[in-house]
Image (cartoon, rainbow, N blue to C red; front, side, top):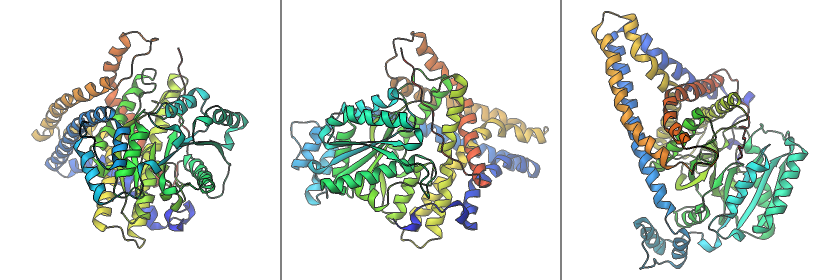
Length: 529
């Protein structure tokens, strides 16, 4: 692996690198203070800034709701497709004239007749790396069974259970027992123990799955399996692929123009335990699902997140994932992007990987665990410095326009994450506090209130999608639980402020003062009948 590809060690970060670590937090605090600053200078300027910000936020919220609906509809469409039959048609190079197929499938067949893919469908082998730390068998076994229940030949799937030595003998025995029990169903299966305290690594998922990936590479070499034919999917302990996932991924890998220089992003849906989670956690989980519905409609904004897939060839060339980032999934996009000089993209696959909403043993512990999870996600702001360092301070062939666009979008996204909800809460009242006699200052809260009322119309679309994506209600809950699934949306302003903005500001503040976050595993509890 090129030495430049990984994040610089903490004591080796230059002043330029530190500047871009400080930048997101500095901008966020400046924007939060800007209504107060402008109110001292000019009430009119303050009112225009606040009104413009709210209107932009409102417009984007409406667009978010619309795209979430279309993303949901696309998921339902893809669930009905016969992916295995479409894979066979790619293999044959012709579409069954009697079958109903989407137009993009026919276009792919025509394109491949002129420019064949470097990988034929029958050559593709899947590898599944399931990362675990201290999760119980009750969490892990359903994940393994979901892989076995897929509509795909399991003898073309390699199962790797990656566990941590620091978790102790109990977890080691559990991992070996699971591989022994289920391994015979796969092409190959192995439990890989990640040693503790490896030099150059921070504690986190990246080191675990990278070590497992290197062991997988050894097996492929022994079995004489070409890494370019292997697609690696990484799963957390609670990630359960839909039945169509492996067939759909096989299709996508065999038809895209350059399958090596790409990642494949399924749809994260936090619905495994949605009926069991407390109401605030349900709102956050559903909001996260909506976010990836939206991204499925905007492929140019796709990044690796949680469960994702990539060619084994690419992973070997890059020495797998970062072992110095606690957000190894999103960060891996930027590693790949710079490794391939910008000639890299993420293809959305609108097939679900079902995941858990945050649920710990006890309400207070669940609230705390949710904040820990959100601060890790918002710590993706650390990639801004990495992007600037690799893109602007190191010689590379990445197209300048594309790099600048991605950099600004990423920076804006993290700043908005930290500032959007607080500004909505207080900004409209700032000018009138400093200028109680000013007409514009007094009218501003009324105008903003009316805009926010209109925003409730968009919320109805989100409510529809939320109810449609709910799994069946467990027998242990009565019908009135469904009513709470609607009423829970009153928590939305609170969760957006306390878990979205607060977590983002927390992470950005830590980066500002070089108090780097360490990895803490999200607690996963299981509620049984």
